[in-house]
Image (spheres, rainbow, N blue to C red):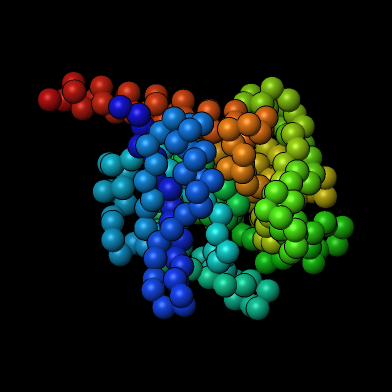
Length: 257
């Protein structure tokens, strides 16, 4: 049986009235076809499942991108108009779930907002708008164009030599898309920044001391994950980590019976 991966859902309204939890098809396709895992959507709210229940059920989690941002109260700052929209239910689930997964060695992959959640989960802070900072580029998704144009490769990422990401890609420079407004201000206590955009914006992080796969990227690797030379190795590495975790978990359960 393939490993089972939980993909964080996001709250939406259909026809401005009917609430749903959903995630992008590209995330599902990436973990199903490239990571070779069974993908299930996890409602982004602490009201429906406990952290212990989720950790017992899944072999890994993907913390996806989303339009709402992590509420600045989570890192000790006041909310302003620049911080945008929020989803307090998602904050209430993802931040403790990330910490629990790291503690238990469950493989986790953060994408865009998920990257920011990794940082906040370990005490880090965020800038509300990267493009307003001196010397920074506009990392936001282009407002116009086709979806292919919006997700097109836009800048290089310079990686730490000898780091976890260089090990995955076999190079210390990769080229990625860019579709985010916020970014890391102060790195969390256990957050190690291994990749930067040319303007100094952190783009690739790992959790120091994690016994399992615990990596996050600021861009969107789920786009064309089956063929992109950066995305595919990342999801393959994540899938291998989940397969190893599942085999160990099943072995431990069988030994205990």
